[in-house]
Length: 353
Ligand SMILES: [Zn+2]
Image (tube, rainbow, N blue to C red; front, side):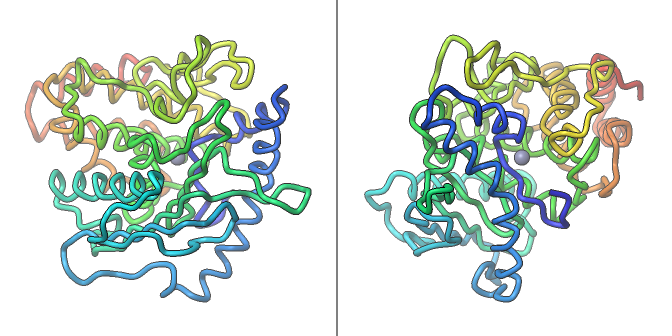
């Protein structure tokens, strides 16, 4: 998973490993297929590199261009074209959700930050829905995941027991597409602290796309990721919680307990999950929420602007301390209140800047 373009999934490997031991065979089958998928999709990618024009086209004008494909419950990417830019909605809700979610994400970046698509050059937003994975019996199972593979989005239909289809959550769509923005800007290396920052920016902007679209203010907003794709239960609320890392699920029979720390003293130092990219992101995530709430108003305004400019300024090897220092430097250019809020937020999670 340390390729130049790693497959970046919303469901981290430590959850898939646990689901592979689920008592429910529907969940178990998908998790086993999921864990064997990374290598398979790398093969798809190396094939697609030979045919770049089929996978990514660049629109010359400053307007959004979306293509949504149907993988028809196979692992074929992109699959069969189901809806293209300007086309009417069709009967399949997954196609329409992928189309609308990509559109909302494009509009968010364009209207707030004058960014023309992921690459700022009008890149076509390619999505595939009904993506499945081969099982060991020679057939396919629907995917319990969504991912960005460096070129396009892919969404699974879930198992119906633990996960719904992954297009149901706008923050999941915004999260995955932001991996594209990151790859064209700071290009944070997907391991260790730089990888946790890569996940952090996807969580932040994924949530901000949803808050912006729904008009949620910082103080009243829902700060969870993936609530809409999870079948609710007492033991689980979401995939991650930015405001209170480590509380999205607790003693869940399938998911276990959310491992995210919310303070640098609890930094995960192990090797799994590419050195904890989906785990340690809890630390900067909490700093962002604290800064946004201290600043008030809408999180995509002051806090979102500071974090977006930071994403453009960081390098591929940036660590938490670099990110904290950059947000503070940018906040200071906006005013004393911004500087104070950002400094206090980082201090609360153990980073002194
Ligand atoms: Zn991600």
